[in-house]
Image (cartoon, rainbow, N blue to C red; front, side, top):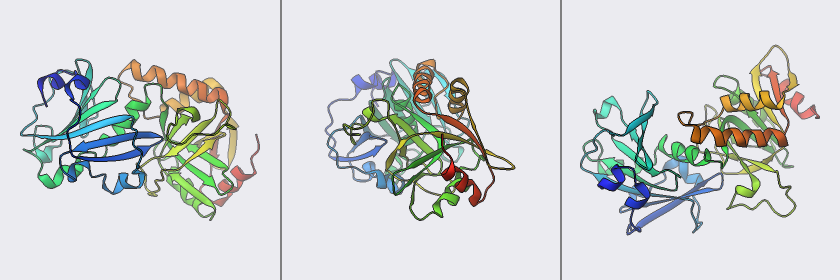
Length: 322
């Protein structure tokens, strides 16, 4: 990576692409174009392949390149996940370093991106990786970090959630912390043959008008929200590129019975924020997500759903009316 990119001026550092190979995938209407000098460097892998798209337009551009080594980032550290990745502020952009003790002290991969998360470079470290490892350029969690940060600039939100759609297009969105019962809920609903699962663990919610690849149509109200499946599934391993309109939101909790309680708007915002994939390390990401969630709960009712893990939970939701 050249010195301009290392200093953080990522967008200025990336010249018009001369790279021969390109591939594209789309998650929640966000199209990412990946560019590289080998087929392996633009490989989507089994997780992203179902989300591949032929769309010529793209929202985010990612170039993949190799370097003989990658020195640890020297910019101001903003956050360390404590497992695999950390992020640094570097001039006008961000640098995400990916490292593991198994591959040594230097990062094996780096994502350098401009401050709007529109243009990025993925750098692979030849000290740690072989040519065959080029297929790891987009490997999780890099792909998710790119999308969640893009969303957090007022473009939507990713939630810890499972989402289902019936054949009549009635949809159900269940939001919950790890262990709240998302995978269990997914399996219970899947027993209904007419249900399509968008995801058993992570759902993206966006305004309908903000989805450039799948127009909502002239009959869609202005404040319609859509839930989208994502590639990042949970234990039940459901991941679909499809979408559906959100009409109400349920917060999952284990209980001794099946009880539904409507939440106030202020409580709903707090509960949803706590179950979101928001980059909490900077207010420039948190504030737009809060504004989005406030708009969401103004438009849609939000309920706490305490449930028991059997088919009666499904029947309770199907019988529920606002």
